[in-house]
Image (cartoon, rainbow, N blue to C red; front, side, top):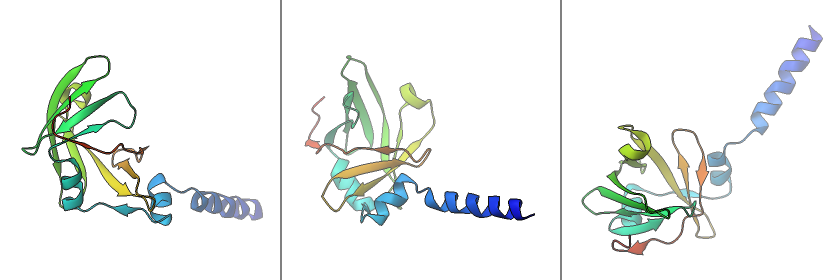
Length: 134
């Protein structure tokens, strides 16, 4: 019985010590962008992907176009939900599934996103460039 209790205590301590990327960012002072902030950052701008593999243009009408460094191109849609999540549907990447991210501004002014699907942290994001630069 003591061994089981000890194992439970150790397991609880390990679980509480595990912090998600989102929790760590918030603890360090990152702030989730509002709908207005996320829309302003992206709408009408080209954003280089944090992976460096290409860039996407977020048109103000909600359409999205991308160009990868290998020449691949495609289209989709994007929107920002009332809770600030930036969401996209790009059939070439995910079929008809909508994927969403929360965009956070760090105290040093850098931007990162957290996937609401898997909690993966992306970034830091480059500064968006005005207009369609694809």
